[in-house]
Length: 314
Image (tube, rainbow, N blue to C red; front, side):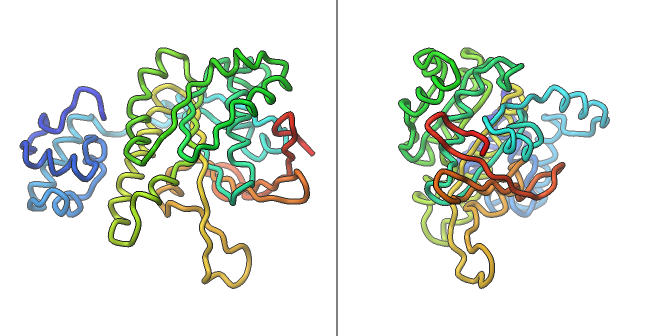
């Protein structure tokens, strides 16, 4: 939730409207600020004119406006990158997994999404000259795939002390979508206290798919997922940290030619992820990574391998 602004502090929002907004996940003023009057009117059961006044009041409180492009460039130049362990994969991402942004990897089971997360959890602790941030990791596990033994073996291969590396990874198991949302919302204090440079959510969509089944709940699911992702983006911006999320795939039976798999989450995930990487299996321990969406890089693919030591070049 945006600091120092409660829903009741907003002009035109009384206790009843505030409660309705909270029930559908609109408890963050920024979510209201980027809503349309028609959308807010339907959710809060108020007139569009009143909804428009509330939205304008929030925008004034948050001081949403323009800034010069040189300020944007100055902020972006503070961005750092975490190596993946593979030069080819780093090159695909323009140097590595960037801070201030969300990097999404999606693919079928066994494609290497979680393995890449383990590698990043180790690599973020490396010195800057070795492709790290000299910072720690926050790991949210929604599927029960976290393996401290695997992380220890990757750390050992990097010449690091496994016990020390594991102590620098702050882990939480998310048991449903609301718990996952809560963990991210409470991450701010941990980030400050423990010098976090990377947040991993593995996977971002698993609980949302399980908790919101059927088309009737699709709109609510997407609204909550959207808010969840924006909370992660705000943390990335506020603390100059990297966010790595994994995503599941679904089959598209209407696709007759080419790969019929597609990432879960719809346009909401596609719009907020800075880099979207499609991972798939190849022969033996080889994996293919295809960059399918990036604002500053071309769509292309590279090959890397997963060994006992972690992510490596072929």
